[in-house]
Length: 282
Image (cartoon, rainbow, N blue to C red; front, side, top):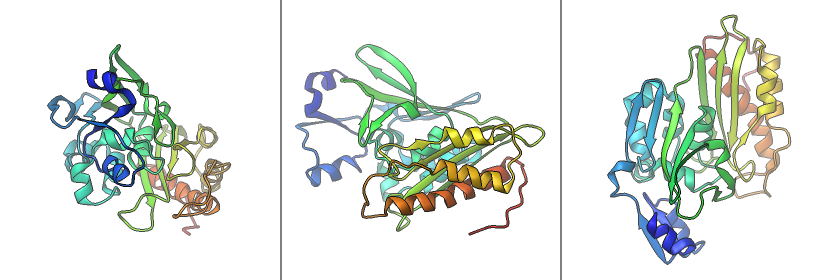
C-alpha cells in the first residue's frame, strides 16, 4: 500500500500476470513499476467459517478448481472456474486478478455476483467492504482508490432449496466469453420463487449486467415455462452493447443471451427441486 501510494498511476499490481503482461506486451499499458503480491502469503487461502466462504485475493483459479469445499457447496464458482481458459492459465491466474482487471467478459464475476459476494478492500485509511456488483466502474475500471487493493472475497452459502447454473458461449473452450450467464434461484416450500439472481456478462455492456427487472418478474410465482421465457427476454432487452467486436455483434449477443438465460433458469430450478415443463429445448 505504501508503494501504491508512492508511485500512483506509474505502478501496477501483479499477481499471476495473465492479463497484465499481455496488455504490456501489446503496449496497451506501460507501467514504470510492477508491485508483486505473490509472496504475501496472507493473501492466498480458501476458508469456510460456518456458512461464509472467504477467499484470499491471490488464490489461484486452479486452487479454486481443486477445492472440495467449493466443489461441494459452491458449485457455481466451481463451474465458472472450469470454464475459464486453460489449465496453464488457471495455474497462474488469481481470483483477485480476474475481478480487478474489470474485463466485461470475465467468467468469475457473474458467478460471484449471483452468489451475492462482497469484497474486503484495504488501503491507507483502513478496511472497507462493498458488494462485488458495485465494484466495477467501466471497462477495466474499478472503484479502488489510490493505494487500495483487494484483500478478500466473501461469499455466503446459498440458503436451502437454492439452485445455480453457469453457462458460457465462446468461440473455443479457452476463449473469452461471447456471452456468459450466472443464475441463482431460491424456492419457497410451495415452489414459488423466493429469490432470483440473473447476471449476464461477456461484453454485453461496459460491465456485467444484473437484471433486477427479470428477477422481480419471477418473485412469488411458480416458474412455468412461459414465465421463464419471458424473464429471459426481459433480461436481454436493452443491452447497452458496444460496437460489433471480433467475437459477435450486439444483435447476436442479445439473441444468444435469451437462450442461455432460459436454459440457466431451467437448470437452476431443477437443482433447487422445482419442476417445470419445457417443450422447447432449442
